[in-house]
Image 1: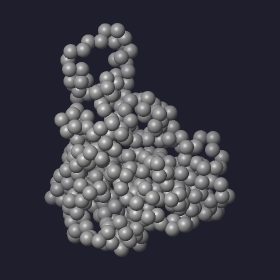
Image 2: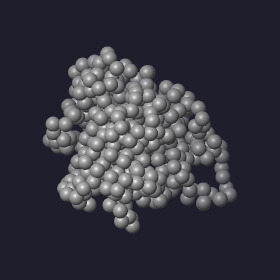
Image 3: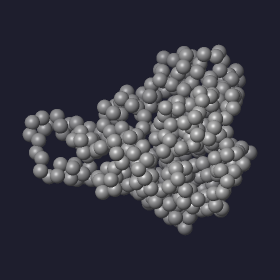
Length: 399
């Protein structure tokens, strides 16, 4: 009903379209994502090279803005070399590339799992030519990781959930609590004795201020000109855009599709705070935060590039474990974004979750002090969570 009210509001109650009404109604009511944009979630098809088969699973990994910033080189026998697609970085909200490298960690973890499923053991060497610098705009084409393959991979039980894993963006069931035992299971999914530490809470006294922090950070992200415009440009509105890009955030709600079709949505400038688009986005973020039934977070002792990647590997393991439980787990990344205006919220998050302020020294360098890498809301979705679009396998491969 809310979409129909938005539809009427967008039309201003004064436009009646007679010609082609049936076809228009069919277009407006159809909210299905094109099947071709979701083919990756059916697994590899017709791929004989076990490396390509494994990559076909790995490309379903979660990344900020669904950017899929991965390139793999298969020219070396018995190896896979992973690079960052620097053209897919989001320099406004992620100016130091930290979130992008978390996404690379998730990719690596799924790749290792998929290779093991095919009986291959992968030895992962991170940064074989050295870590990149602080500013992604000056990154060279350095390999993020080299995976050397041999026989003897041991299947991982979490692999069973790879093609079922989803990132929920809808409201959670506020009548269904998340137990402390479930949080303990998520904690156990993070490899012991690693560089990543896991925490979580379902205590309402801690959950409520975290909800408010996530709401405030989301408002700041979409109201700050640079990050707000970046967010707006990552929206893929309607089947045609979704299929053409197969990345970003798929938006197929009838009212927003109509606004775009009527030229009422300008994606060349930040959305004004009194616009329907701004209110729609803010409402979505506020609903997500307000229905969080708990939070989990990941931190590292420092903030090296290697630690960022390891955080991504731990995160996707937690999300796979959550999938097996029917639990939703969505990153709430805004409070940890590193553009200047977000600094107070980042400091608040570190104080609330790690018991201390963000280190005064450069928090993007190793040894800078404990650093939050991920905050995620958890809860039980009210409806099945759809998969996000993915680009075709060949678009990731150098061969």
